[in-house]
Image (tube, rainbow, N blue to C red; front, side):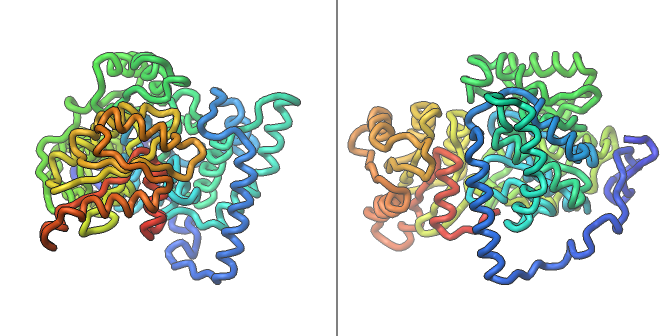
Length: 496
């Protein structure tokens, strides 16, 4: 950005920081701050149109099938006038914690008065969750409008591939929709979550000003590589020339690969445990109290209303990313009150989310062994359940044994089931794996998620001798983003 374009002084403590411009208020939609009141009939019509759009998108390669290339998404955005270049982009890559970190960055930037576009994947309940402006998913009608605006240009890219050539994938079209919707809003900054990998992920068509990288572990090995170094090399592609790389805690082999990439493209680097990190952490009611070391100094008395030490590290990563965006450095930090307000308002659906009480029902989107291990650590450290029943459905292509092994020490009973995805592992196959890990007497198999949750609740209630003991029982629903999303819908939680 030009060096004479700065953010308002009130966002920063200390010297004014070179970062970027705030658009005039006249650039905003005149009605952007007004509640949208819609006719129920129109809402129903929009939902039906949304279903039709999804049916069309589902004729394309799904997100689990990748055609590694930026050519198609670049061609689409070129036809659209390169909307992704009309605002700065912050990109979040890694294996676990991307979605949480994106939402924390969004909260920080929004609290500081910026209009933020947020792109995440996959969705929990409704596809419109993926594209959010001002912290809210775009409306179904708007989602359809964006798709219809792009459809002719998507067709042009498809036709250019020729007969038998690769059409745009579903994820590529969705990414194009997000970048176009953000430009049209318009947003002042976009925060985007990498779908898979890094260098050839569709989101990487944008040159991110700041790239945040959460811990990298083994996942999607069929596409990203069989070992940590290969996976890290692919994910390192989000670090663009002249950018800032904010790197979370990593295995030494991974860190070496990321630093080599940063040197190669002359990127500035900040590392967890070195330039930023968690200084102190105390478990608090409903979450945790943190003291964070940022790029510009220490931020104390930070209430984060979510559980898990891993979320504290995500918060430190998010803070450093926002500081880097604003140009924070020695003795120049963000306004502490704004930082406190932002983190206190963070909501992370399906991240150790308490959906019900007595017994407590927790929902979590852990879908690989590293995520399950972080979940188990948090459960052991921050909860004291008298009895905890696990409701689990895992995708066929995931390391189900690794997930079950990680959770075994912290749960008493297991109810194996199936989520709504056609990719879900067969219940009998998953049940056999669960019996190997937990033993026959601890495992129940139920064909559908609703019945599985009811069975789990009955298990934790069966030995409760008094009402006060009942409150010590818990149910954990996890194993997949789809499993957690299905449970949110069953339990009446609104999409977020």
